[in-house]
Each structure stands twice: as C-alpha cells, then as structure tokens.
Length: 149
Image 1 (tube, one colour):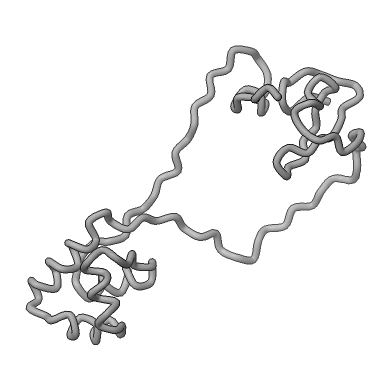
Image 2 (tube, one colour):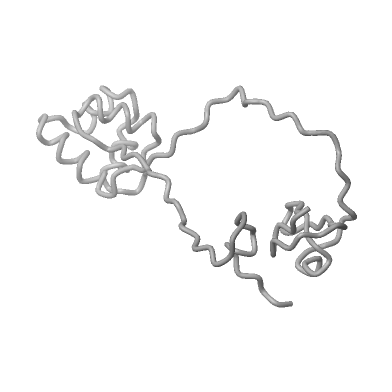
C-alpha cells in the first residue's frame, strides 16, 4: 500500500482524518491528522451514477447592469414594460440596472431572450499543472504544502 501524503510504500498503513476526509498514510505521516485506525481492506465499493444532472458552471457578465440598461434603452422600453415582458416586478429590473441584484441563471436567460443580449458566460475548468520530481503516481504531499504543528 502507498501513503497518500508522501508516497512511501508501507506494509502497515494507518487511516487518519484530515479536515473531514479519510486518507491512508504511513506511520510517519499520521501526525498530519487524527488517527482513526489501521487500514483494513474491505469489499470493493460500488459507485452509482447520480440521478441528478451536474450543475453547469456559469458566470454573469461583469457589466450586466449596463448591458441591460442599454438594451432596454435601444428598444425604447420603460422599466415597467421590460418587467412585464419578463414577468418580474419593476423593482427587480431597477435593482438589476443599478447592479444591486445579480440575476439568477433563469432570469439571465429570460433577459437574453427578451433583450437580445449575451449575459451568461461559460466557465472553463482551470487545470493545475503539477511538476513531478519523482517517478510514480502523484500524492497529496506533492500538491499541498503541509503545515508543521
């Protein structure tokens, strides 16, 4: 078995809790968490696919208030008219245009469709590149800095 912090091969691994997560470590690395017990190999876990769709990550344009205000002005609508078209209250439109209220994804989609503007921006996953100095799999110790107690 290999220690998940330092990568050292160990015959007698220990299980510790680190910030709510159970990890398997060698006897040297047990000081980095609370000792739970010795590692015992159990039956293989069965992972099931979630029934729920994974929520897409999105961002609202930083200048959404200006975009909404300018698009409403180009259409020649008052705030009350826009509110009626998107089935919201006038105070919601007022707060959106002042930047006091950030629109939800559903509201942003309604505004995009009604005003013909782009408010929702896709978020790309940023990948962290880890430089390996040793051969073998990457361990937690390679990624995080361990604080001395």
